[in-house]
Image (cartoon, rainbow, N blue to C red):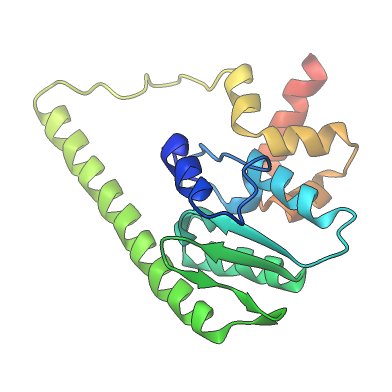
Length: 195
């Protein structure tokens, strides 16, 4: 779900078949891969454990499934492999029909994912232009040279890595699951070892 959670939950309630007791609110910025989002991992764990009947995950928009087109398609593929249908309100599509992949949904997801990725790139470009203008006017200082990310901030930014380290997984296993670099995982592990 996007940042405006109240609006989206209200929208879900208008559809009688949606169970709003089981809502996962994702407030992470869009450039974070789906399976590195804490709520996404909770959602996936919740729906894949002890499941005996077909399930549909309802989302507000397809762009909530990843940071770019490749990530979105990979997320959909993982859900499809687990026979989990994704229903998107904004695009009006479902990824599975009778537990089989919906080819039209794949096409629409590709197009919508490309548009979302293009829009994010345009936002980043405008942000760079704004920073360049602010620098030229002496209004933007940026991060101090040599400054470092605090240990607490590092842990806050990587909750999934922290969880996997605490479960005793090896660094390579965590890297494979989270698609994070081993360097990042080792930094987080070092900070956790200090606590």
